[in-house]
Amino acid sequence: MDPFDDLLRPVSPAVPDASSRRRWLDGTTRELRRQRRLRRFSSIGSLIGAYAAGLLTVCAVWPPEPPLERDKPAIARTIRDMDSVVDLEWRALDEPAEAPALYREAGNRHLADADPANAVRCYGNALDSATPETAEVKDDDNWLLMAIKIARRKEAESCDR
Image (cartoon, rainbow, N blue to C red; front, side, top):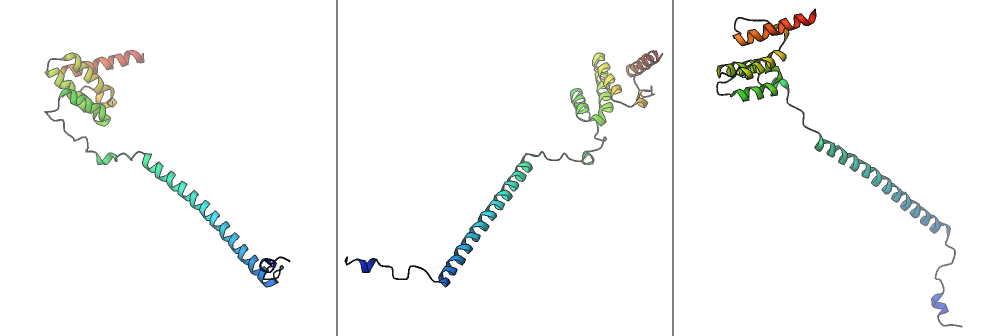
């Protein structure tokens, strides 16, 4: 007989009793449920984090809303004497609502500077971007603008026939 047999023999019986088996089963089941809940909550947390990151990305990339039209000064943004003819024409491109008045003023200035070719171009742009009522000859029109309006009216009449 080996002297170590007494030391190596199990202290408790080989088959655990029913109460300790139940304790082990309950503890193991509780731990498995806790791990399953932890896995589920971490998956849900990952999904929420990805959704929030997507929203933040869209918010960062989305262009800001343009200012409202009523925030802009009205057409009464006066045509200043210090505006050059080129500035008036650029403003007419930037502000389509004011384009007829701006092109007309640019045409007046070109005509005053003895540059009828550019005046004709500006008057043509003014009439192209204006309403049909402004195509009528008026008392405050200069000679070149009257001539262009009359020529356009004749051309429209000849096309209607």
